[in-house]
Amino acid sequence: MKATKQNDPELYEIVQEEYRRQQGNIEMIASESTAPVECLELAGCVFNNKTTEGYPGKRFQAGSQYADKMELLAVERGKKLYEAEHVNIQPYSGSSANYGVYACMMRMGLMNPGDTILSMSLDDGGHLTHGSPANFMSKFFRFEHYALDHETEQIDYEGLAAKAKEVHPKLIIAGGSAYPQLIDYERIADIAKEANAKLMVDMAHISGLVAAKVIPSPVPYADFVSSSMAKTLCGPRGGFILCKEEYAKKLDSAVFPGTVSSIHLQTMAAKAYTFKYAASLEFREIMGRVVANAKYLARSLSEKGFRIVSGGTENHIVLLDLRPRGITGKQFQDALEYVGITLNKNMIPGDTASPNLTSGVRIGLTSTAQRGFHEEDIEVIAQIMDQVAENIDDHTVLDACKKKASELISKFPLYEKIYEDYFI
Ligand SMILES: *Cc1c(COP(=O)(O)O)cnc(C)c1O
Image (cartoon, rainbow, N blue to C red):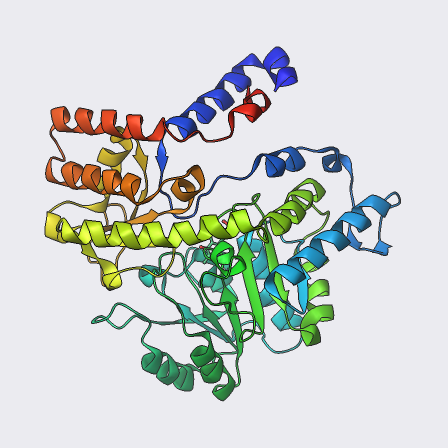
């Protein structure tokens, strides 16, 4: 960062502060991960300077020959990684990928404004773009929601089937932001077929685990699969969509010119690298470690008196119900932030607390696995969490926990030493 250091020291110092924050903190926000150095290099490369619209071979601007070459390479890698018939990698984010699918449904004449989309409710772990009243999509479509079974805290498939019969959706959405269990895609695909609806799986959170084949893939069952890139996939900020060949042409024209204009080519380059890296043995081992560590944490916290929502985890997320410990999600989040563990408060199924307080927290195990944490290190985290929950206002205990967290994380650098120059 030599040029910025010299010419904008004020901004340079802010970036350095953020770098040191990431170095020194135990990062457990479930939507975060650490992008490889290659991703950061590519996301800042000279492709940023090129304006290109359209698709390879059919660009609107001259000088796009290398953009063509790169997009073709990225698409090839994406298709191979997910064994998908078609991939579109132009969406700017996971949200923009979802808008691309809605636009495609409209382009195919399968969905019109006012039609119904059936998705998991935000309170149960859905996403803003799945019909939250706060999202502008809710003004165009009628969103209906299916719920979790309040006994098992897993998707109530029978309820979902009944709801589909009742509300006649054009699109059913599976996938969410705080769901720690596997989803039976085949079963939802059958429900969608019966209801004459298309199935979109939003795998934003789990696309890294899917790529590494440590959990099942939705690709064989879904008409459309949307994703972001910076969650378990550990890539740049961006999105992509997978679909069957029969929708390929319509999807491409729905994405461009339907929902995006000039491509973020520098991000696309980082996406191309991400697809290559996600096919590597190293990545697969890390994703295996993510799930093993999550299962370990759920078990250990449960033994220490925490209640684990849905009884455990099959992915990178552990969702805690803090009511038995007599604290709110907000209190736990703030105390842990002080200690040096970053996570977020989260609503839990049937939560009656206000969204600003919540009764739960969501814990993600991606970044720690990337940095090399194993079970014995996760055990230290579980012990710290237990002590913090028990002594939420006791600064002597919190300070001791802070020291413990700092000692732990100092053993696992954010990036390899040889790349440190790159950040400083
Ligand atoms: C994070 C998330 C998104 C949005 O991804 P962005 O890249 O942040 O726009 C969409 N859907 C789900 C289920 C998510 O968890």
